[in-house]
Each structure stands twice: as structure tokens, then as C-alpha cells.
Image (cartoon, rainbow, N blue to C red; front, side, top):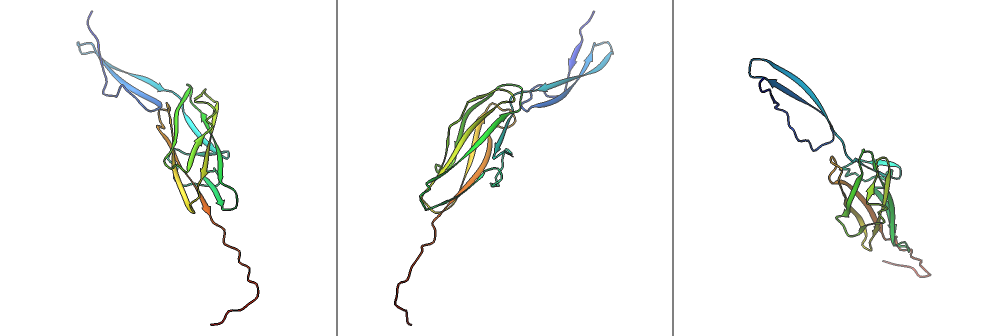
Length: 178
């Protein structure tokens, strides 16, 4: 009897979900060498995000009305905010834990996270509310922190604008001369 040594040049630690093949070489020290393949599948939670029923990709920086990342226009006519609801779906096979959702602009407020834990194939929702009194187009990067291995954090951009309506002047009588 002897000692058989198994070695590999492949990594033994993986941080991204997927299927990997590790090639092992076995040597008994007597000139007998063989190889074997080991398939390794890394699973975990997987966060997907939807707005208005359309998927929002991780890193999306082009707001669109189709997925509610372009939240719309506030007019200075009594409406003080716009709120949109977004859905996080766990397409992984382990529980997704959401540790926080943040905005880099205080005019976009995150609220109403329905659950901080999401079972496989289930969803959670949260709201983003845009409120401002300063005219112009505003944007924010939203970050969803979770235990999703391949999307840490999941980020996307939203925008909205506030417009002051044009004044309505009524001229009564009189004329102007130059």
C-alpha cells in the first residue's frame, strides 16, 4: 500500500454562482497517474428586480418609463410627491436576505419593504418616493444590499423631475407702445 496524492491547479473557492469543473491529478508515486473531473455547483439566493412588470438589470443607469425607473414629472400644482413600487424576486434556491435599500439622494426615499427575507421563487416589494420643491431633473442611485452572491450590491438609477408650470397672464385693457 502507498499514498495517493491528489492535486489541482484550479481554484477551490468560488464567490459567484455557477457550475465549475475542477480537474484533479492523482499520483501514487509509482508512476501511476490519472485525472478525474469534479463538477461543483455554487447555488444561493439570486435577486431580480422589476418595476411596472419589466425587469431592471443590475447596474442599469438609463431610467425608463417602461420599468418606472423614470418616475415621471411633478408639476407645481398641488402634487407634492411621486411614489413607485418595485418588486424583488428571489430566483435562487436559498433564502434571500435584504439587509438594506439605500438612495444616494435624500429626495428619493425608500420605504415599505414588505419583507427582509424572501424565500426561493417568492417576492418582496418596496416603494421609492420622490419629493422636491426645486425645479429640474433629479436622479439617484438605489442600492439593494443582500446576500445575493452575484449582485452585491444590486444597483440601479432612478430619475424624476419637478416643473413649475408657465404662468398664465391675462391682460386687461390698455396697450403698449414703444
